[in-house]
Amino acid sequence: MNILFLGDIVGRPGRHTVRDLLPSIVREHAIDFVIANAENIAGGVGATPALVEEMRSYGIDLFTLGNHTWRKREMVSGIDALPTIARPANYPPSAPGAGTAVHRFPDGTCLAVINLIGRIFMEPVDCPFLQASRELEALPPETTYIIVDMHAEATSEKAAMAWHLDGRCTAVIGTHTHVQTADERVLPKGTAFISDAGMCGPYNSILGVEKERVIEKLITGIPLKWEVATGPTQLNGVIIEAAPSGKARSIRRIRKVEHQ
Image 1 (cartoon, rainbow, N blue to C red):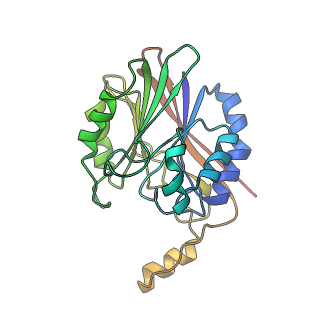
Image 2: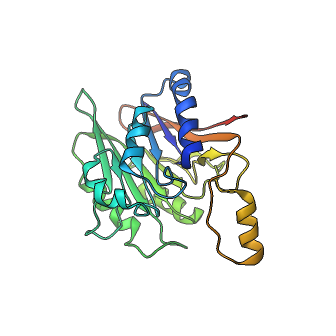
């Protein structure tokens, strides 16, 4: 099983980059299943059900979210009707949506995606480590492949989650920082890990945002509205090769830059 996980998709540039590049990536690497973090697909902040359906038409099977999950009102009211999306599982139990999304294959086996959010430099949430175990225990018994999106700021917290879940899931993939890291590996008990898968969106930007606005904010301290940058784009993600047992055999980075 070859699973492609795409890092945070940022705005229209990110959506169109996935649309343009995903088909050839799937063919070239014999991808069986595609997962993506979609918390920034709507103008760089948040997501809407309509845009999720657009991304599904491009070939993405399941989606994760993050700290911008509720930035668009349409997602608050519409997430319960979207079985392909997992929002952070350690949000309060009263929040709409589910922390895990499950796909069932024709042979009866299942692939699950669990979404968690970190607590270091992030908003107050329940413990992601305890919630991860609860989500695993609630999975259908036929679940073979389990991908965990750890949406967090701190590399240490992401690495701790990977070691905490080593042997209990196929992969722990870090998201949120939009910068692809070079620490991909398979842990001793068969769980693949990378601190951050990177992002899909503007290349000449700061985390997908117009660089001039970010620089001005850092110099003046005056809040500014972020705008998604334009120009060349990039696609970042990882490919996980999983054995029939659900253990990871390998993880490798993928990075493509479109020069427009």
